Length: 246
Ligand code: NAP
Image 1 (tube, helix red, strand yellow):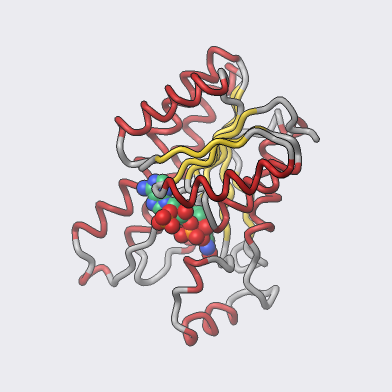
Image 2 (cartoon, rainbow, N blue to C red):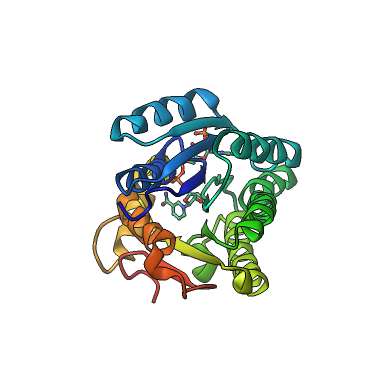
């Protein structure tokens, strides 16, 4: 129960990797806020988590909207009075080759995947500086390091997250706040289920471990950065990719 007494906010926590992170944190005793663009799915996930005896609240939050982010943090402070851990997990894809990529698809991905991390981190740091303690964990991607045809917007957003992680880590290390990233490879979730079978088979060939990862594989790496034992680790990236990028 190493996270007992801690309060954690997980964006995009209603399903997929975010939900696995929430379940992992709940097993370790953290109280949780599941913030998602869909309030209904966030509520359902939060309800399921209270079975493990922790407090779990659901919030409707579009991470790309500064007014919604400010309101959500106000609500968290009202309900929980503190925030120890922020996991910036919400993310989308709008794939297409560069020449065909619509400007609106570029903007949507950058707004949610990158600006969302900026907005939530800013609110979280404000609270964590006062507490003199905090953990921010950003979910990046292997494509930030390798690129991926069809994902100019997505890979740029995830590479941006790495720069944002390192800069925020440098700015607030002296205030007891660590900022780190986890870069998953191909993980079996709705995001990868949507890929065509031939694309999935091609991807499998590039993974030395010979299999997609699970959302729990990612959650375990996130849990390390959230744990008391990682307090001297900041500005780092853990790659969870079965060896596809080293
Ligand atoms: P997912 O199954 O699509 O889940 C993403 C969650 O984020 C959903 O609950 C979604 O809500 C929510 N969301 C979407 N837009 C949002 C917004 N503007 N504000 C708040 N919440 C929003 O995706 P996933 O596979 O679990 O991915 C989670 C994170 O891991 C993402 O950042 C993704 O880029 C990253 N990642 C995934 C993989 C992979 O292979 N799956 C690999 C590398 C990195 P709705 O369902 O209602 O849209």
